[in-house]
Length: 102
Image: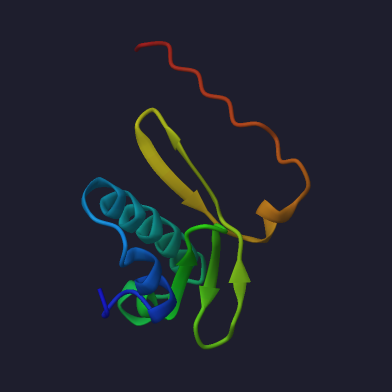
């Protein structure tokens, strides 16, 4: 845990085990991967520099105190996360999905 989770996030995850811990780790990983890829950086370099406030849903950079509010969700069993300036526009268009079975 110490390698990939800064102290603030370690404290949040300390009380979790089993399925709640698995879900929290997956959520954190997806969101951190989204911001790191958006920054064109590497997971190895930046993963330990970001911590997720699991209650508030904000992502924090340890060194710069930069705060990001990601979007996240699930679609057809797949979880996703997205970050970026365009996400901060008021009332983004709703996501629609059509599958014709083919």
